[in-house]
Amino acid sequence: MKQTALRRAATVTAVAAAFVFGLAGPAAAHVTVNPDTATQGGYSKVTFRVPNESDTESTNKLEINLPAEAPIGSVSLKPVPGWTATTEKSKLATPVKVHDSEISEAVIKITWTAASGSEIKPGTFQEFDLQLGPLPAVDQIVIKALQTYTDGTIVRWIDEPTTDGTEPESPAAVLKLTPAGAAAETTEPAPATEAAAETESGGGGSAWGVAGLVAGLAGLVLGLLAYRKAATAPSA
Image (cartoon, rainbow, N blue to C red; front, side, top):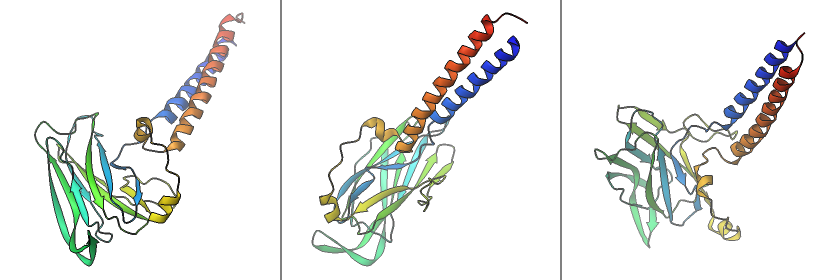
């Protein structure tokens, strides 16, 4: 009887621990754009955050692709120490008006390459800033990225958003755009904290994490009580 109770306590404790740590595990990091919302027709500074997911290799190249079907008239780059940047332009089917003049081509690709010693090391991330505008009159722009590692591996963050709301395996960054009038009528949200910015999977993951911790702690307590009861019970 005593051994059965001990085994039961151990099982409850193990299941509770697995539940806690399984839910608390972070989702795979990917290239993101921050902020992820802007106003149609306006200008916005956006930051591409690039984490290194490899345990042994460094990231030495990043390629960002802007959609040619929703061109952005002006693209300005902020220098990143230790990295060189090049841009590629494409002819536009329809000219874009920028500062009272029309342009017939727009930037569709930006490539950053690291100098030796400036790569994104394992366990770190780098940020790349752009000034974009005027932003197109579309609901969102999908910005695909290619991340290259020092061993030649290329991770393609190019999967477009799904219609059912689930996150694809290798999601592209998405910049959502709202009409200027709608943006003016919307109350400006409070600035997000750095901790919130680090959460790649959104608020739902935090809620599940808290629920998992509560359930896990309850399981641990039950397991310890069962163990204590079994240890103090007289042997059969």
